[in-house]
Length: 102
Image (cartoon, rainbow, N blue to C red; front, side):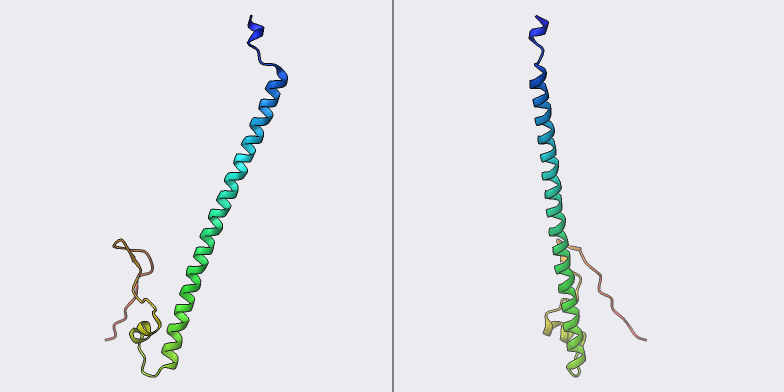
């Protein structure tokens, strides 16, 4: 009776092979999903960096080429946000710096 419960060696080998194939496919799928996530995050970061560079260039050009311009007037003209970005009441970016001369 005990030999009736034993799994045939060929069937067990087939199940083992299928298990490793499925496990490998799952691992490859997870690696691909992780790569997609990372590349999406990198593209978003590059877009944010490019936006900052363009805003800095616009502000710089305004200050350089418009006589009597100030940072505040150029910020409103070019749409550059000189305040730190706020999300849900918490500061998410760089803190603006002010200078006082005595």
